[in-house]
Image 1 (cartoon, rainbow, N blue to C red):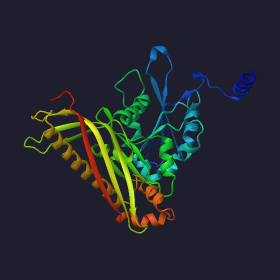
Image 2 (cartoon, rainbow, N blue to C red):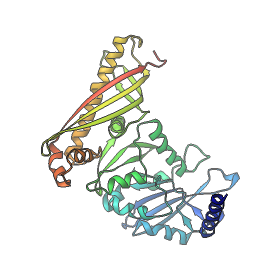
Image 3 (cartoon, rainbow, N blue to C red):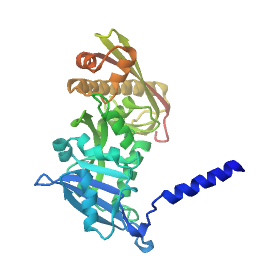
Image 4 (spheres, rainbow, N blue to C red):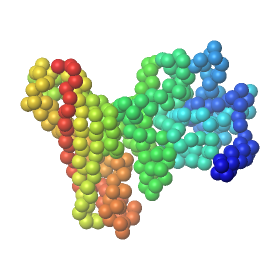
Length: 361
């Protein structure tokens, strides 16, 4: 009984210290975009929902300009009928241009210290203008564009080939010594918004991209995942198209060799099912299934090797190989890693198991 009383008193005092915000008294941002205009001023675009029962999915767009991202919220609030608050923000978009010219650390520095923002906010890079994306009408009229875009990223992570991403994960990777983080890429194609790939960062700069066709193998390299789609052509006379849905994928990294001549062996294991196939032969034939598995193993291995070679040539480490190297070689520093990484021997072995052939035969 005493413990219950203590909890009630704590709750009472906490409630008394809080500053509740009534929905009708503030503009609650659900998405923010940042572009660079012709005068090299930063333009912020805020998506503000309209909370009226008869206006489900309705929203307004507020904009403001400043020389710093952290100042734009105040600029917009001065022009609006109610102050703009960030507590409901789900997604933040940066144009590729602003990332290149200013740098991602400068752009996200205030996010790290902003108490209104949650750690699970999605960050994205836009190929083009963030404003163009945020001014696009979502296909679902019952949600605003901010909710639609955050849901788009979420379903890519859960059901498709998008690697896990949010503000907390991005800052954790980018703030490390030589940290190399990544963010999803948006692109407007006609009237639709699509996830076009992954933006790769080295320290402060966007230096490379993973295309949408490489996202499956990239996600497999950086994390274990349960869902994902991979398309390829079978090496037969018809060049038959095959779509494989991953049921479970994992990667294992083994570091060996010396401090100055290390090597890393990567073992990829992919268990999946045939989601779609234009193969004429019956998919109940074990010999045919094994042929698909071998070709998938070779295809994914070559794709992974190509990506990793590009990473080494551009001196970027989105796979966090530095951590694995340091775990094996405790008495090393970042300079040691910089010397060995570009020429490090990195081998890949891929194992594919087709567990089901689906219903399309």
